[in-house]
Length: 172
Image 1 (cartoon, rainbow, N blue to C red):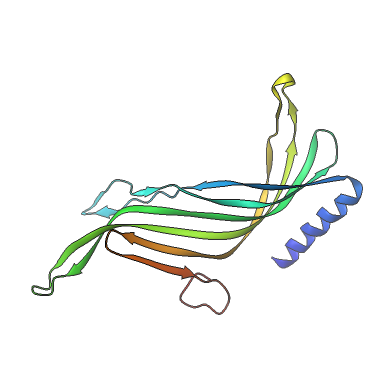
Image 2 (cartoon, rainbow, N blue to C red; image 1 turned 180 degrees about the horizontal axis):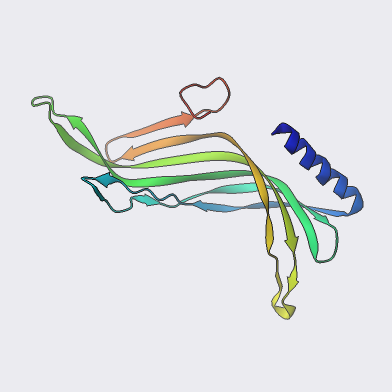
């Protein structure tokens, strides 16, 4: 994997000597959504997940090879995740020992990544209406951390998600 990243960076940097390079900052919002259905009593309940808005910021490098076709790469710090709503959690009754619903809560997963995209872009002129720029490519992502937040009316628990080779009970 490291060799592939080094090769792609070398190609990108060598292409800069043959073409014009434009650097620009980029920042915005990233919407992510995950859909989860639960099977209870052999039937599916309604979807309880929702979208979550996170950040996206970084630097884009555009490598011009011609007036219409070019390569685009960059390095971005991106947040992704999802939320799950109306989770019922249960606790045992101290007298009977039977489990009773205590509350409903919302669970948030917020993950942070470093992304390195590499795209080929082709500009199609639309005259006075602007330009359409379809692109295709790949990206590499490295999980840098995150958090899990469990929130209800009565309680709030926050867990950091640590990453790395020595972490055994978190995301690795």
